[in-house]
Image (cartoon, rainbow, N blue to C red; front, side, top):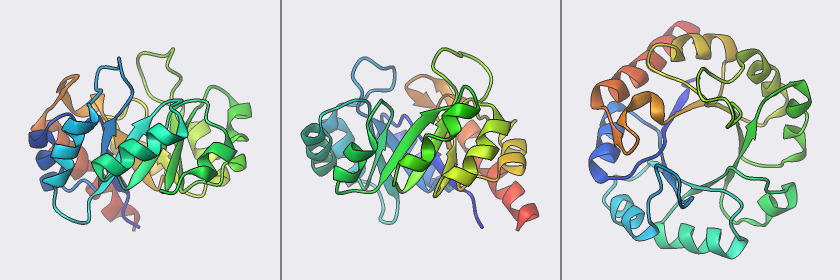
Length: 206
């Protein structure tokens, strides 16, 4: 199975096109104000309308009201919702679009919360308090048994994504800072190297 790749934190059309040309399956647009990669909905809509078909567009939210999430998704033609806050399982089921729920893994107890969420995919990340390094891959691998589809995030780069996929075997990988020139601009060389590394390890595992 081919590992899906999501490039997150898209803020401009050039970066979106770079990611697509490199082979990205999905692009993430962050609608959480006061975060470094926030993009205003009108700006995201302008980017998304210019994209080719068959690219998944993911709107990232954190503890937003249901009406706000639905309104922004409709305005921007978002195809999937990603929830980064303390949203409940019930909240997730109220959304009309596919949902990715994010879980920060600190210990094994966190793994068992995944099963309560009937969502399209579970994304595992490192805790926000940890500024460097990656999510604990051992916890991520164990979490895979409790998720419908596991997306691996947290500190991934072109240098470590091969080993991460080999060890965890996720449904998809998600990267933002690991392929950036700065917090609002992607590095085309890193984007291409990241996706090339993913496709390379896929070829050896399949």
